[in-house]
Length: 277
Image 1 (spheres, helix red, strand yellow):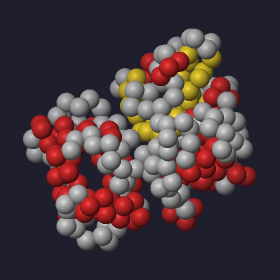
Image 2 (cartoon, rainbow, N blue to C red):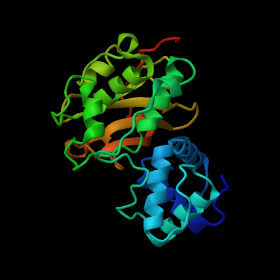
Image 3 (cartoon, helix red, strand yellow):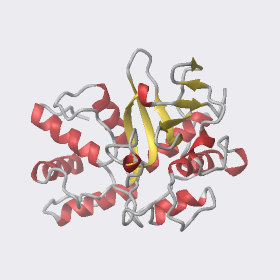
Image 4 (cartoon, rainbow, N blue to C red):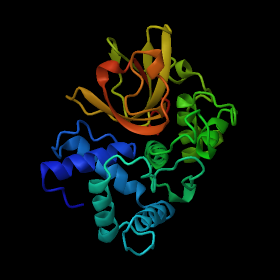
């Protein structure tokens, strides 16, 4: 990708990435590590031909004149950028969001690498999923809930998101995560804990956030990146939002699956269920 040239262009791109569920860090006009990581993850999702066609149709309906070929090339990117400049944060810009019924799960044949790599590939593929009406519903959310036998219940699904990724990446019989929708179960017997330390968290490890009001872990997700020497980590989480779940019960639930940048100090516990695989 050609890096946006000006501060205004970078801010526009950062806002767009955030609207699509990829956290670029502060909207500060600086094309740093987190913006680059968010752009890379977004580009990986753009390999989904059906999603790109939806984006191209969306852009053409709003004045663009690009070929609907499912290829996220220079013309599509340029048209997308022009739309972003005119309508920053537009609520209808869901051409690539897997909102409501617009959901195409990744296929096992699309996955490559070891267990951790496959789990992360699945997790990245569902970033951008949004609830249909904001009530833990929709085809995509039901598929996630179904991994814990809760399809159609509109239950919280942060833990189910982790279980879903294990199912899709390795199959139900080889899924290393506990088949539970209860967040504390995903970090039982932690391999790393705040204030205690332990094994350095790795991609695919489950993490939990503690809520004092609940006296327990009440939100969980997957570690995407845990860079040494940095105060932040990168995560993929279901049932969260732009602000995410940190302290108040009212902030626990969001509207979809996001890639987020979190302070390591907010992470209460991490459990490595995969081991050396």
